[in-house]
Image (cartoon, rainbow, N blue to C red; front, side, top):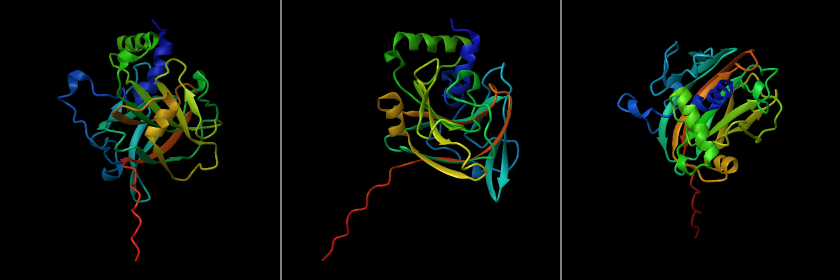
Length: 261
């Protein structure tokens, strides 16, 4: 079996968003929505908006704090990490072919100085948006299936078939695809990099179908969950960041040319 420290390193990323699938024995307790509940519709405070839930990664990990706050009249989530790693996750059931555009807002006041997502021991990010996808795990290579089995034995949860993690990196250039060191079924995409846009709200839109094909070389299956995570467990540092609403949208249809006389 994998060393426990290696298992936890992967669980930090993978369980954050989506393994985040609803456990089979709890489907009667959880309503899986076909859309992502808005933070902006909630009230400031400690509660989590409907549809979202706290995802504690492991008893070995200190949890990141997430609070609903008023930012210039709009309700957003403020994340505060202190040598910690946990997330918020929203189970969802969505066809990416119909809703390929994923949009969100995030704000980062300061980067994590010693973070480097290309190295396992410094793999932290002030913001992560995580999307998990269904698929046929039986079709995966033997080593991947064994890895999935080991994760399930340790955590009691099933990893999703594939997971995309959008991050804000210190140095790696935008659009870089960073592989996970333990499984090919988790890929990080650098949605933003460097210090130029710190301190201001950024609006991001990604085509998850195109990103999935680029990362995994195949078409994506059903989207099963979306999550957010601010983590500093590997570097041991402090980080604060903000998340706005997350939305899946259809690709705009081209307007037909207007007939002219």
